[in-house]
Image 1 (tube, rainbow, N blue to C red):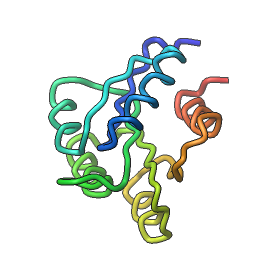
Image 2: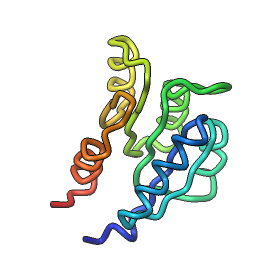
Image 3: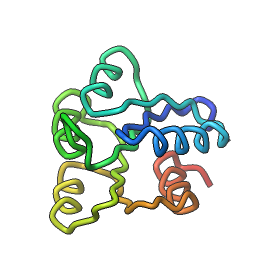
Image 4: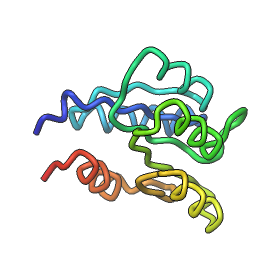
Length: 124
């Protein structure tokens, strides 16, 4: 399917969530890196490119919306999936306005996430 060349960055301050998602994506054949917050992710993106960023909304130091705003400034063509345990209409609308491809509530159902990833990467 060509997934092995697709690089994904998982950004989540919850280590268990970050590790679990990274393991599943790696098992599916993606090259996965992770960051514990938006600042760490931006530092990573200064030297590496990824095709997709999956980021949590609620994180310390720089939340997902602040990260998305900064990402638009530095890497405007990035594909972003926002995930959150606190789905609110306001944050959903702001994330979508800022260019998020999708907004998914936690707990993430991996089959639903896989469908979104496949759509982004045009995988049948």
